[in-house]
Length: 312
Image (cartoon, rainbow, N blue to C red; front, top):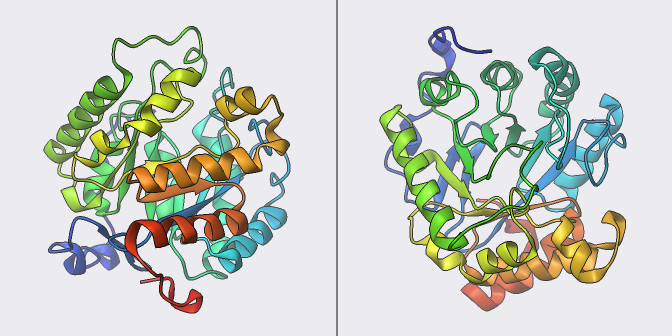
């Protein structure tokens, strides 16, 4: 699974890094423009092209519906659309790279021709990431933080695309089996620091690295709340911090509600994350989250720019 050496990037991609080599720490360069996180929070919309994701599994398995959903998210204020073809809910079964590609590639291909904002591929597999980049994806969201597939780090480095590195204790199959930490904030910080260093040694540019504490991935309610309270420890790593709390189980436990009844809790957690220093919020409900984040950004950064001028 991706253990063979990766080919070099196509010639047409070799100049894509030039504009970003001197980019400030909170400006992320992608193929489809610069994303400035220095004065506002970036909203990443989730499109699950899966039959079994915890919140909307099966709803967007049909490519046409997934593309339409992505277009809607772009209209509602998403800055990035994150497309995934393998469920990572607790206990989810793994899928092959071939099956994952069958799900996501038609969506990326069609959506790329319809939206101008960056598209993210949510995968742990280098083969899937490479194919997604070929179809027009802009960044890689790897929940394994480059641990699952040895070919992923060389691919990201060669392709010169942004990568999100997430903390996860265990695997999706085992992560919620009594997770334990002595100090969850310090342990997650140390892990992310080590993965940043790994990425750098593999040739990934620092300016292209995003970190994610992995809310809900090998954490119980108290762990998740502690990470949200202690988010400033992660912003101290000097890289943009991505936080995904949308419809997560810990919100359901606090509200005693199912995934479809967690909007208010998701928005509250997103606002708390923004005020604690998050730079990217990964959400299912883009319209509502973008509006909530706009208020949080006003508190954090000052009066916002007009709605029509949101993107860098």
